[in-house]
Length: 137
Image 1: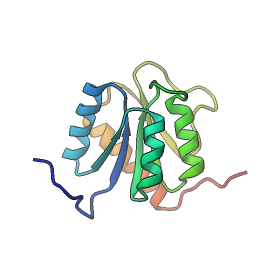
Image 2 (image 1 turned 60 degrees about the vertical axis):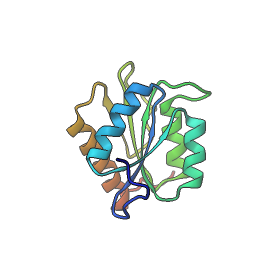
Image 3 (image 1 turned 180 degrees about the vertical axis):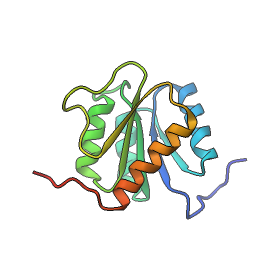
Image 4 (image 1 turned 30 degrees about the vertical axis):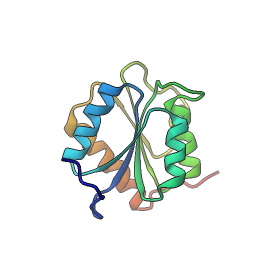
């Protein structure tokens, strides 16, 4: 049974994934690891959630998704607009090329083992919480 209200100590993760079965699996993994998960199927929906939810600690985004931008561009825009939010990009089809990932952003190839996914999210959140922000040039 899903709780009606978020437990205050749970970090909030915005999951951006267009494939319903993949998203459902990732939600289960993240909830089992005691994250509160907010879901979006594309970058447009995710931006609306970021604007409305100042409690989001991290974004987990796929690279390939419908809409006008991909996960790499979405990650760059999140880093610019919400520098305090950790960003983890994942893909089973493509890896990052030069300049694809903004500073302080992590990448994992799918399939991702649940423990590796959780550890990577915890790492990007810890990096942001510890103030390891890369100065803008």
